[in-house]
Image (tube, rainbow, N blue to C red; front, side, top):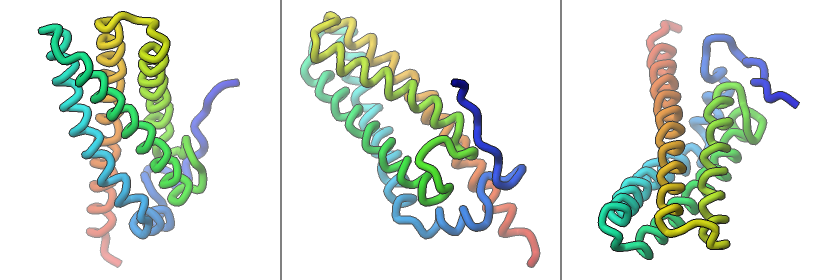
Length: 166
């Protein structure tokens, strides 16, 4: 089975006018707008704690808790993002406008979930766990960049549409 992007609803546009109206009217847009920067803040704090542990050998428990909190945010934003996609695009995931972001999100989730598995099964040493967390965080940073670029494109599209005379 191969994964293919669904056909575009409107070539060259991120949102159709109907999708844009649903996006703007949805409470889930606000939820995503709050969760995304909150998750990023948790990521930055956790990244610092993980790097501190790897550098000094101190703070393992704090770093571990921060990774668990970051992973919780990731799962929460994935579920609420799927609901948002359903409302805006009519499908829970892999809508054309966010297809590649969603594909990469699954890699991010897989790495975070692998960390949970390794932690709870004691499959890795503490240092190995932190390195796995860094791999998950690197994937998250790439995925966050994808979404930021998409947000920028949406803003540019909205600005361009608002400048078009009626």
